[in-house]
Each structure stands twice: as C-alpha cells, then as structure tokens.
Length: 139
Image (tube, rainbow, N blue to C red; front, side):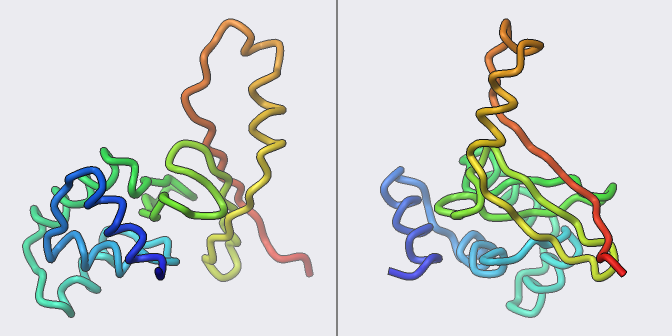
C-alpha cells in the first residue's frame, strides 16, 4: 500500500469521508511542505478553485491530525503527519535552509525526551514539541 492509500485507509478506518478535495489535498501534500498559495495553485490545476473549500479541508486534516501547520521563517506551511517517519502530528523538527528555501525534517526521539526531562518542565504535561531551525549552507 503506497503512502496516500495508507492515509485514505486510516480515514476510512475512522469513518471519515474521503471527498475529492480531501483526496487531492492529501496527494498534493504527500512528501511536500507547501504554503496555502502553493496548495491553492496545485488544486486549481486539478479543478478545485473554491478557496473556502480548501481552507475547510485543511482545517479538517489538521483537526484530525492528518496534517500539521508549520510556521517556519514567518511563513505558514502544511505537511502530512500520519506515518511520516520524520515526525508525528504533534512533535517534529524542521530545518529551513535559507539559501534554497528547502525544508528538511529530522527525527530523533532523544531530542523530545531530553526536552521533556528538563527540570523547568517538571510540573507541566507536554502536549507537543515543535522546533524550527533556520540555517544557511556552509561556505
């Protein structure tokens, strides 16, 4: 089963509808970090032009923890979360390489455990950890 089929399977398993716009949105977001404008343009190429439908479906996917909203470098991106080997819907690390605007994900559960065990956080229940790192290529 490929990645997008796995998403569809999980939606069906939760008794959630897989509408054509949701299906297209999942296909577009697969292996991409896209801004709303990029999503809008990609969906328009597939015939989906209603902006409120796009917003509603993005909100739905975020609420269901199928997608996540990321703020990196002052820009909002969207990314799929289920079965992403680099993160889950709650905790993840993204690096924005400023030279080429590329977003790279790293997965290291030790980072999350280290943060959760900090004495400053001992009285808190951590819901999620999201880290954005801005970087430039070494010259």
